[in-house]
Image (cartoon, rainbow, N blue to C red; front, side, top):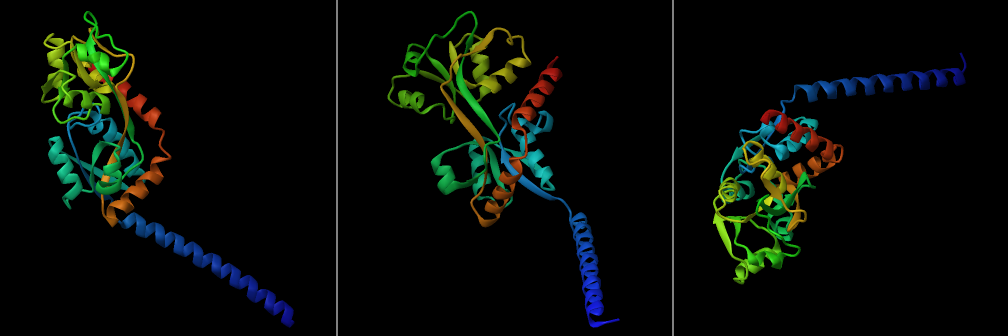
Length: 266
């Protein structure tokens, strides 16, 4: 065998050996990954049905989206519920939590409070009213003619909240969306500020389903996000989450979830 043939044989053997080593490394990597236990991402939230709630299927629509993304990343999600003020405190500062949700986008949150995820949904805020006693309005200032129910601590819309602070808009404060809807159905107030899906859910399980309406136009629309803690670990979680979120069909997931809720109400 000549030098050329020997050199060729060495190259062939070397290439085959590289393939064997690469294959062995890939198998070993898969075994190591399989041996690693799933990571649990613990988040704080509030009872804001149907977006989040311990009694809801999958802990709510937002929770279902988050769990789907984390499942694709090989992680589990655990949600603990608090009042909103405590939810924020736990999610931003308690090392036990990776963050909290669902939150609206604000510049302050994005720049100083959180590593905000890309949107996991949206909140459409408008006016709920009774079919028999409509609240006609085209612009926010038109609502000044009515006393409107609001939930304590909630941001409504910049224009509406400014009118309240200036004394131009009369409001009646409730402790929760549930109590706000009860006041509306009991005809104690003519209209309420409420999220479209929240109103849909709360009336889905009552005789008021066909008597409570939602305004044709909105006070405001906000995207919903996960607020991951503002730390290197939080940043890593947010980046991995956002990359996987791009692969999820949010509209399809929301549609399927709402159909599931409505089927369970019948």
